[in-house]
Image 1 (cartoon, rainbow, N blue to C red):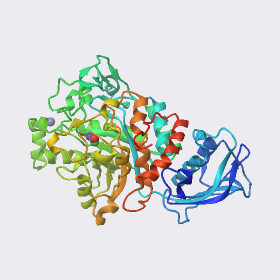
Image 2 (cartoon, protein in one colour):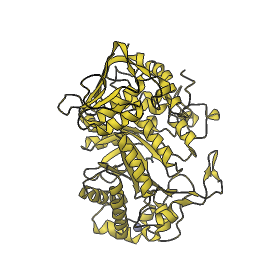
Image 3 (cartoon, rainbow, N blue to C red):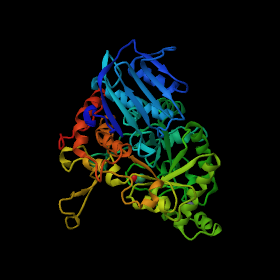
Image 4 (cartoon, protein in one colour):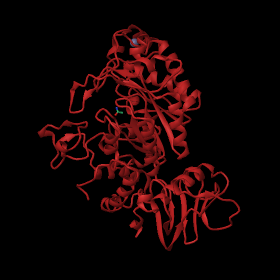
Length: 524
Ligand code: ACM
Ligand code: ZN
């Protein structure tokens, strides 16, 4: 009977009680030591007031570091007289509050607006994976701070714990760096944008913008108030022509760069032989680290063509002087140098799986996106891994085979003679049930599974020009992925029908939060 409450993600253990707790404006919010942030959030969500000296009853938050509750886990006990939430850490309290939010009537998900009944229940819960992230590309298209905050609120609502903010790209640099003002003046702007329905035609409209440091501080503080870490991504050595447009001396050729308009992969990247590049990156990271307190920093590392390095005297001299074998090892050397800098500042580096090529720098974690092979290889070498394969986690892909009736998205056809019987006719399809079948441990030998920190969804925005479409692509697939990262596998496979049953109610919560999700008409 655990599905009665339609919770997403499904908790580890749910036992229904009898009766209800009446949550009203008079319900006291009683908090133990160390609960201040969670208390502020609870007061906001449930419209209750902190009270002191109340011995029993009310909504009670307790932090007990000595309890045997798992990291980020919680125990939530609702009786007719009391709601008691206990956790061993602050994130556990936040996760428990999200469950309590789902126990309210769906219409009140955005905040309690009237007296309401909370069903009596006892829930013990904790996540299966510690890395539960959602990525947003704000470079191909940019989104207002208010939308970014809403995106973070929604990921917190699903007990995800990290917002991966993809801030720099060929098509636009989106974060203010005081030492390099031309990043905001030049790198943040492109002359036009490809049309969604035909990427080889262009709209002729200049496009751009960037987040000021105050914007970034606002987002990081908001995320923190919900227990969410913001993971910044600053791309290197590739996906950087927008930087070269402003500071051409940082490229191998040294001139003729423009912020890229076309989607796809750019040949012009940072010159690995030029020491100024590392001075630039260290300066940028100095300012980035000041804004983002995250343990990890994402350095990109994907899709870096080597053609410029092959014909650049400085890059070739670097290969020779450092005793490197080839351009692959030059990339590894480049990434490793940045990793060392971050480590000297007490941070850890994560990059996309291409950073495996030429040798994985010491201490680097890998986000495996082209498949799971990179992740498995990195784990077998003793590196931490985040699984985010295109096959399950790419929310920019189509959610239905019926492309004609979906907004344009990323895809390419599979030739007829290469199709799997009954399989899709194109690459770029992640249906809801496919997302729900995700398992970050799949294919990973047991001996290395402990190196898999978790997974994440990615939302690349080439084909996502506005907020409505960003939500359409994200939900409900992100609800499914959230469950795959939080909830234990009930057996060999997850119970998709059970998920869909709960989702039909959960969609009402998303309605209350004004989310423009895609209605899963194939399933409901
Ligand atoms: C990626 O999708 N290029 C990481
Ligand atoms: Zn070079």
